[in-house]
Image 1 (tube, rainbow over the protein chains, first blue to last red):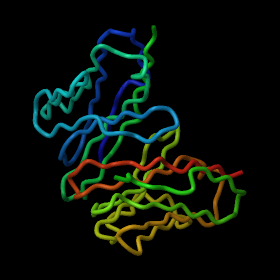
Image 2: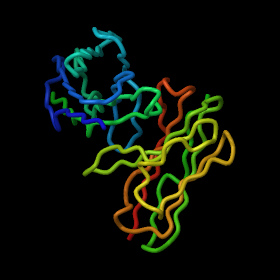
Image 3: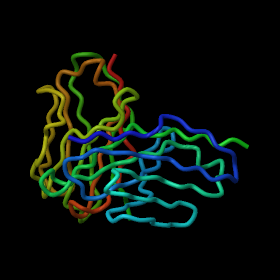
Image 4: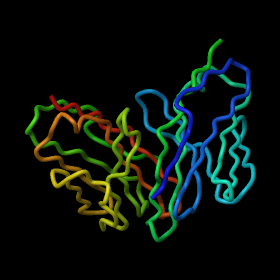
Amino acid sequence: GQNIDQPTEMTATEGAIVQINCTYQTSGFNGLFWYQQHAGEAPTFLSYNVLDGLEEKGRFSSFLSRSKGYSYLLLKELQMKDSASYLCAVRGNSNSGYALNFGKGTSLLVTP
Amino acid sequence: DAGVIQSPRHEVTEMGQEVTLRCKPISGHDYLFWYRQTMMRGLELLIYFNNNVPIDDSGMPEDRFSAKMPNASFSTLKIQPSEPRDSAVYFCASSETGPDTQYFGPGTRLTVL
């Protein structure tokens, strides 16, 4: 099985930097995904890590440490439109069929 | 380039009625996933298909739920009979191969009265 934990809510100020943490315990690991979900909309893909280290994509970066079962999503130069839920998801290996197991999401509120 | 298409977008029904949700994956994607999202439980995988074949249905809550994929461009999720606790947003997602990124449809918001 898999357990994925992330904070329920976070608040940050426009223009600031925020880090959303995710810890996981899994019997098989084949990558960690971050998705963004605005209220009433579908999750959209943000980033993917399968090896340790930092992946940077514009204002968003994602870090993975497999030995620690830990990832974070870093959002820089926050904008009001970044207010959304951020979902951490772990993908199993081929034995578990590549299914994604999602955390419950972190609701981020960006304030002026 | 069309994304994943789901219908209907909203469904309101009464307890005991049959509900059918529909999904058209992105063309060329071999994997199709059905998820359910609630406030209490978050986003949960119900079932997924590879090349139209169901691979893992361990997430299907009970026998009232069934899913089919008669061809590469169409899948259905059926609930019969529906119950109020089935109220949720149901998402369909597809990926080109198993390890690839999953792309989600807009979801169907189901309300069972």
